Amino acid sequence: MESVLLAVLGVLALAGGVLVFRCDSMARATFALLLSLCCVGGVVALLGLPYLGVVTVLMMIMEMVVMAVFMVAYMMNPAGLMPMSMLHNRRGSLAVGAGVFAALVIAVFLVPWPARRGGPPPDTTVQVGRALMGGQMLTMIVLGFVLLATMVGATVLATRRGRYDRFGDALDRRTPRDPVGGGVGR
Amino acid sequence: MTFELVCVLAAGLFSVGLFGALSQQSIVMIMMGIELMIGGVIVAAAAFWHFLAPSGADGQVVIVAAVVAMAVEMAMGFAVTTAIYRARQVDMTDMAEDLKG
Image 1 (tube, rainbow over the protein chains, first blue to last red):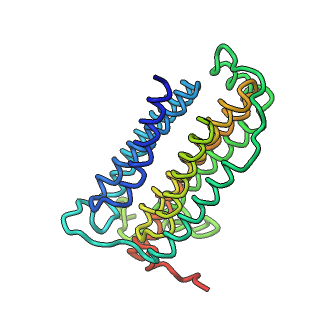
Image 2 (cartoon, one colour):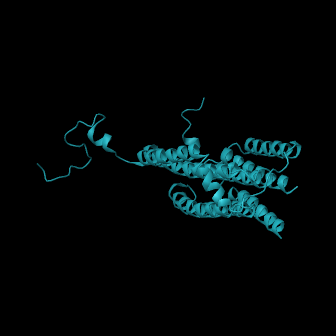
Image 3 (spheres, rainbow over the protein chains, first blue to last red):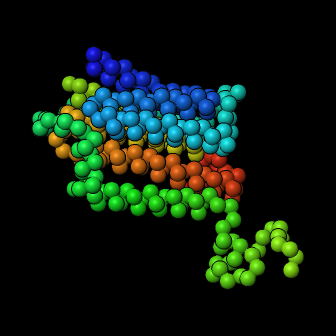
């Protein structure tokens, strides 16, 4: 039963992944990616990690909804009303993708994998929580700093006019340089 | 045998994502390709945890790191897209090849 479900989810994940780059409509491509990554979350849950599987699914739903908004904002063909090709170097990319896939599959079947050691803990969520708050604390700290840096960096990059544009590089201009004068005219 | 098949699934997701990231012109579609590649990494990490070393938490920590990488990639990707679109109305990679050597 479990292996059947695993197979179905795996095939769906792969089909969704292929569909992402076959759809004309950007909205459809986004939801194909959502299907694919939700199946990835399902596979993770089936492999005995329900917490991380559910986290993956929830995060993917949020991400894809955000992505759909940006899609419509930035893509040249958001609704796919006219079929158009948005590819460059198709043959080279296909060759690289197929080559990497073949190499990985050969490696998967040739590498002498070690035998399974130990069994899963009674609660896998406790296992990852204890690891992140104990032995893997450094990983957790680094991830936290990376996320903080991302928040700051993304905000700075996406700001149209920040305080350095208004007050100069040394922040020493008394009146800000704005395209439209504000205030009460003093 | 199941372990190998799940690894093949991971390899397939990674390769499809790689093809997309290399072949698409739109910046947003390239990011979707990278998401698929990280999805493959997540599947592989879960397989390694489940089939080879379930007593340690290392596989789970790799999944956490991969999920964080996904979020960071999305946020920074959209920030860069917004910045370059604002500066030059660029939404395709072929219009931003200043550094092409």
